[in-house]
Image 1 (cartoon, rainbow, N blue to C red):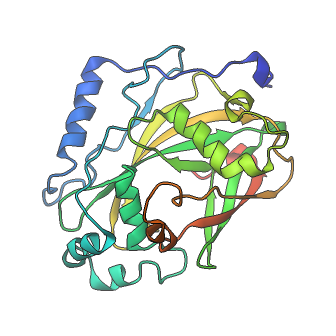
Image 2: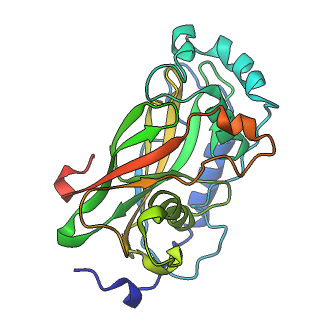
Length: 279
């Protein structure tokens, strides 16, 4: 059993050696170059790195997402750039095929620095995601079974709480923000989210996956996954659902752009034993 959250303070992740910092910096720089034929589409090599948790690391540690430039003035300009670089049938299915997102979603991700696109054919979408393995009673983990979308469709998930990271955001901060946005509606008492979240020491590790995007068919993806284990006070013991905090509405002067994107309206959660978690 883990110590009660109030006895175990929120810990900070460590920075890595300068050599690894330099190596990963180079990876980000080459993310905008065109991949060579036969090489990996991902600017990172597939790997897994386990890093022990320590306290008092600097805010701008290596695990923070670097700023990304975005040069598309509007969703329309992004669409015009994508069309000749993607299979026409795949691109036409964005926002039409159930469970997919549309070009407004991708433009908003780029605008907020959550996603970068390599200037290649096809483009490669790189996104940093924090995965939060929330532990409950009897050693079970919280898993999102499916989502209800703003267009009325349902998207299957079958994964722990996940949140795209923002520029200069470290995994811990992204994890707490994701918990607040996706689980805050069921945590009673008006408690301050950081006070009821405990990140487990020595639980952080990073992996890199290369796969086509389910949200944007035909768009190759490089997913840098930052995984943490955590406990959260006040969650229901059985299956439950939560309402999503407005994903985009408060971030843009032209709120119409956010309304045209496909957003998550409701999350559905269940508790599963560790052996049932997706690998």
